[in-house]
Image (cartoon, rainbow, N blue to C red):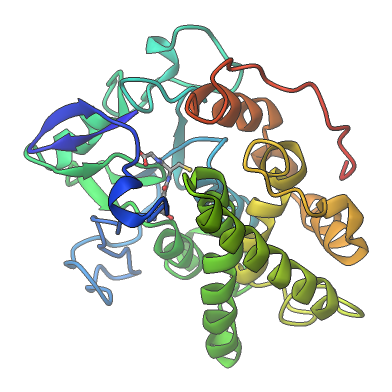
Length: 322
Ligand SMILES: N[C@@H](CCC(=O)N[C@@H](CS)C(=O)NCC(=O)O)C(=O)O
């Protein structure tokens, strides 16, 4: 794995030395917004109107951030409106690569159906030839302008939720304004302690940094377990983006984060309400097809050689959410 520096690929692992053993996620760089009429969004520039067949998602089935976008696309019934390419789950010296360039075939991975590139960093270079920064999924690509609209999953799911009403029969709003403030507040806490918290625990290279992250993670999981007592979803009976964002971490938790990232105080299977929540979201139409456990396990256990040098992928645990 690595990153681009002035348009050149450099093979390099995360640097935790300068941050006392702490993993610090870098900020996202393409921040434009699709709107129904192409008006500019809160960041970036305008000129990205919603259209069928114009936009493309580059994702990994392994990645919890990319997974958010696949779930929103499925729930909003946008499968025929926004197309998808899926990278190979193994992230090696060249970063994310497409199926036709991967060392071995994994079902579900695809070629780059838009640009025909071999590596995801080449897609970034197409948008910005002198790009410096990490090359992450998801990427929302604009075929017409030949550039990246956004590589920030939190914003991509809001675009999929709100911009494509003319192209979908689904009218459910996953970020209703009456709940927006509560959703934002909860998202921020869940991002820090849970979504990113598992990475802070797993990528820590100092005992105190690991313990701090893992304790904060379970404090919030315990709180969310209590919050879900007697209610279907985090905000009550309305399914919102906050649920989607929590789900992508919880579905990876028992198969990967418990062992690989040492988040092993409890399993999600041990939390009755969180487990019920995972099962309920998994059963919503289209969601099951976005969960690929082979990609999830292979990615983490094979790609993170500093954590799992043998690359052995565990066989278990048994799936309990089907
Ligand atoms: N802020 C981004 C984060 C995405 C992200 O970190 N994706 C990971 C995969 S789970 C990635 O592509 N990492 C490659 C790297 O850091 O080099 C988002 O939420 O969209």
